[in-house]
Image 1 (tube, rainbow, N blue to C red):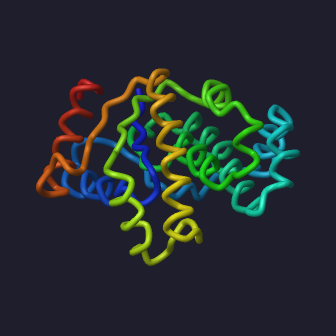
Image 2 (spheres, rainbow, N blue to C red):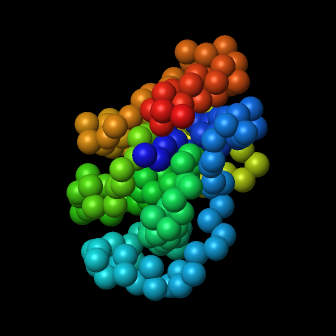
Length: 205
């Protein structure tokens, strides 16, 4: 069993992940959100697109097609990386997160692809820790980040996030997951400790 943190970009996944790793790094194995050593990357890309040719075709009609391609590449590469690394237990950027980001980046694409079916095809035997907050709070955080993931204005990004949040609600029905709401905790460290306790319980460490 592996655990993947997911949520809308800007919700605070990486911050919480880093807190858990910092406070409890001696107790479990984890890998960073940087996949640095995957060989034959282009081969993994081609195999992924060969299996999902519609992604290549439709991506060409998107305004942000380069970013969209990057998101799909991340799915292919990270899935292969996780399969090869038996000690990968805990990550804040696995294979579902780039799927969510692809959903946010796409426009006409969203109406032509079955995102639930794609999720079913790529998902692994993972438990998902969903970090959540109000859409307004997440959008505000996204706009305060040093390196913003998206260049939409606030109104457009809010609409995108609402649509992606709807997708997360649908995917929940197909996941083994636990949800953590930032508003339920006074300090981020409290959320990190609660998340860690649940992880230990799931992994039976």
